[in-house]
Each structure stands twice: as structure tokens, then as C-alpha cells.
Length: 197
Ligand code: GTP
Ligand code: MG
Image (cartoon, rainbow, N blue to C red; front, side):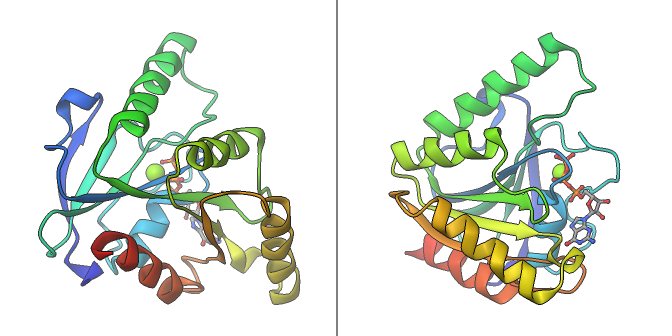
């Protein structure tokens, strides 16, 4: 798969606005500010593909990116745990996000992005459990790995793997850095396997 072929397709705030539910999709989920959009840009070699920001809550819609392989898409989800929006708005997003995750037939895998310095927050565990219960293949990217030395970064990956040893659908835990391009090839390989089986 040529990841550098990724192009913005459309944004959706609810499932009815999503592209037709066919083909194959991989969604990027994770806490707000974890580095989901940056990881997408790094994987696709396109720094302008998904908007990134120092301010958490940048990505507020479900953003779809199409790849040149027919029917294949990458999806940037809004981050969870963003405090600065009203509770109503939060519930609304949460509902649409849940709706997408639960009902999207073409979803082939979930890439859960965590800051390597704060892995497995309660919400991360919920997402990871949910993927397990639904048999949805899960890959964890421990991003901002450049913030740790190699030893501690590898250790964190091992710790996370150990914590999730009984997870039924966990495929890989990958230290990742958009800054240093760590883990990019391994992630691309994983995504390709999911998309084209
Ligand atoms: P939301 O859209 O708000 O949910 O955030 P996001 O998860 O998409 O995060 P985003 O990619 O916008 O990145 C958030 C901040 O983290 C930005 O300031 C990025 O520059 C920074 N960042 C992302 N990835 C890395 C990384 O690998 N290393 C370092 N050092 N900083 C990173
Ligand atoms: Mg984002």
C-alpha cells in the first residue's frame, strides 16, 4: 500500500455523514493531544494531511483519508478526554464516536495512540477492552517515544504488553515517534496487513 497516496476525503460529525460503509478502514483513536494526527501525517509522509496542534481537542470531527488502493481508508478520530468543551457537546461526540466504532462494518483494525509517558489511562483501557470484546484487531502506538531514552521506551512497551497479556485481539505494541520516525515502517506493515489482508 502506498501510504503517501493518502488524500483528505471528508469529515463527519455523525455516522450518517460518513462515506459508504464498504471497503476497508483503520481508525486512529486515543486521548486528546496523544499524537494521533501527527502519527497519521508521519505514516503518510504528508505533514499537511491531518491538522495537528499543541492545543488539545484539535480534531473535532471524524476525518476520512482515502488511499490509492481502492476502498482503503485511514480515519482520524477526535481525541477523548478533552476537558474544555461543555458536557453536552462531549456526550454528543462520545455518542457519535461510539456509534462509528460499534456499527462501522468496514473497520478492519484500531490503532490506539498513547503518549509513551502516560500509557494505559482508564479510557485507553476501556477502548482496548472494547476492541477485545468485539474481536477488533488492536495495535498500540506508544508515541512521543523521542521523549524517553531507548531503554525506558522499550521497557514501557514491554510493560504495556505484559499488562495486556490476556487481550484477545492485541497485535502489537510499537514505540513510535513522529519526530524521529521511530516505528513507522512496522506500523505501515501492520496497517497494510489489515487493509489488504
Ligand atoms: P487531538 O486532535 O486534539 O485529539 O490531538 P492529536 O492526538 O491528534 O495530537 P496531535 O497530533 O495534534 O499532536 C499533539 C501535540 O503533540 C503537538 O504539539 C505535536 O507536535 C506533539 N507530538 C505529536 N507526536 C509527537 C512525537 O512523536 N514527538 C513529540 N516530541 N511531539 C509530538
Ligand atoms: Mg488530532
